[in-house]
Amino acid sequence: MPQATDSIQKFSRIGLITILAVYLLIFVGGVVRASGSGMGCPDWPTCFGKLIPPTEESELPADYHQKYIGYGDTTFNPIKTWTEYLNRLLGVSIGLLILFTFLRAIPFRKTDPIVFNLALATFLLVGFQGWLGSRVVASELKPVLISAHMIVALVIVSLLIYTTSRSRRDWFTSIDISQLPSKWRKVLTFAVVFTLLQVAMGTQIREAVDGITNAHAIAERNIWREHFPIIFYVHRSFSSIILFTNLWLVWKLFRATAPGHLIRRFGIGLAILVIIAILTGVTLDRLGFPAFVQPFHLLLANLIFGCQLFILIGSGYALKAGISEQATPA
Image (cartoon, rainbow, N blue to C red; front, side, top):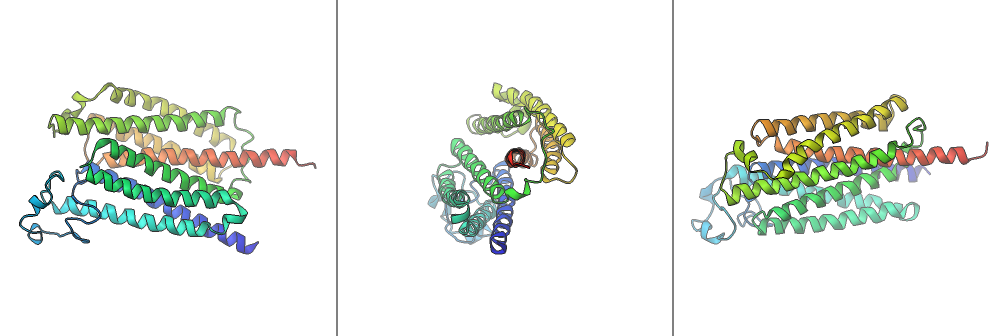
């Protein structure tokens, strides 16, 4: 039994570290895109043909522009090059973390095969994500591929959250959620779907921005809004539904659970994340889409989804534990 408990703790620890690292990568990916650094390394997996990119243009061959014809704007910019390069290094590091997560899942083959199988699926999906990243570079940042790359990252973090939560189901057995309204989990499920729809609309707006800058050569961020499709206004208005739905969920959770419980803490965190995300959205809308705000807005949207998913999973285990206790004869 102690050995089994030790295996669970080690798996959940590396799982949590990996989840945080994936969120960091999502943020850095947002920085890469907002700063226009996506083609800072015009080739893949090397960067200007080197394992470690240069810091000055003089370190490149005189004909490097001709060598990379067809790779987009190949003008060397050390800041953009190293931003993209560090993004790639972080991606490799997360690949190693997910490998370690899979190795830590091996003891679950007999005790909980689902944990092992999902850890294996996550590891294989990261390999696909690496390949997809190479296609993004080869396509010169084709918007559809960038969105697909983002969606796969969301799937990876979802699998990690579910797998890590499942490995520590004992965390949730002591949580009494019997005082929650019967419709609470149904509303929470709708809230998760609403968040996914909001993220999907956000990716459509980002693709529209790419179309504006590429087709119309409009670099001034403060006039992008004049060319946005109708989905931008739907996305903006839909945030009010996101806000009130999540605040209702958190308020009910706060009143129905005792202080200190993990799910309650995540509920409070969810409310804070939603409010900050809306404030960053207002900042983007009213201040001409400042580049430094975009990565935070993207990260917050992903954190909201992850927080909702964790609460949904945890409340499900807590509910099952409560039902089991009621069914057990006195």
